[in-house]
Image 1 (cartoon, helix red, strand yellow):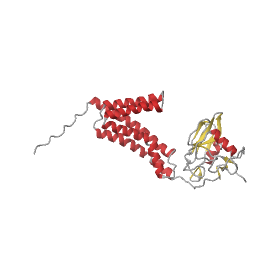
Image 2 (spheres, one colour):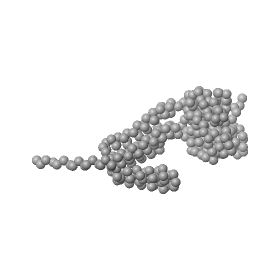
Image 3 (cartoon, rainbow, N blue to C red):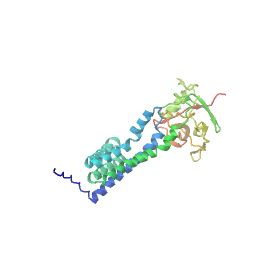
Image 4 (spheres, rainbow, N blue to C red):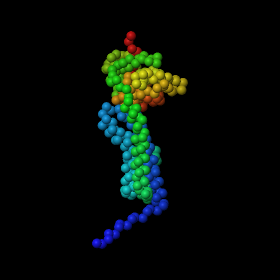
Length: 311
């Protein structure tokens, strides 16, 4: 029998090409890790509200983990086929800069870096490859799942009594009737002017709108919302500092009953407290407060109307 000649082992890349290749891998891993951190935090901040586990997982993968996966996949392709991967990086940079971000900052902070990264992969060679793969794939995944543990536990333990009707919430010196689910407590984002209009025309039962102004309901003040926030059904002891524009709590609030709907996409509320003629305070479900221009809007920014309870 003839001896089979072993296939020749390709020579290791030069030191210069190794440096260029590892530079590309480190940059890609850093970008994927940043997106992993953002995705893990935002997934449980504004996402993960559906009652369907499958839907929550789908949104987590397709929305909040998407950019991390894009960078990881591009890196893996570039390590296996450097010139194909380099070309894909450059093409992605040109596309994003030209069609998604337009001119200016999008070109310099998205387009140019991806094109440069493509050139690094084209000419560089990370060696040994197995460590490049481990770094590029392992680090972003560890960050994503590592930073998902605490918020996943917290969100899964949210208190929800299932009551979406009008209800009186009393505590910390505040007693108000909060509107039931419907026009006065929508599951969609609304602009400030629309929120005010709905409050004016909302009927006394809070379930429908009148053709004429009723002026029964209103937007709550920032002080009222802060002092009404709860966790596990217990008042959080919120205090509003009007001088510094800040809220403090004995216990950090959560997106829970009786004020919030844990299964609604709304995570911000408008308040009636103005900073100036064009700016008001908005409150976040976890008790945070920040400023918001009246003309701005978000799909996650809604409101819940209030009125003085009868009797």
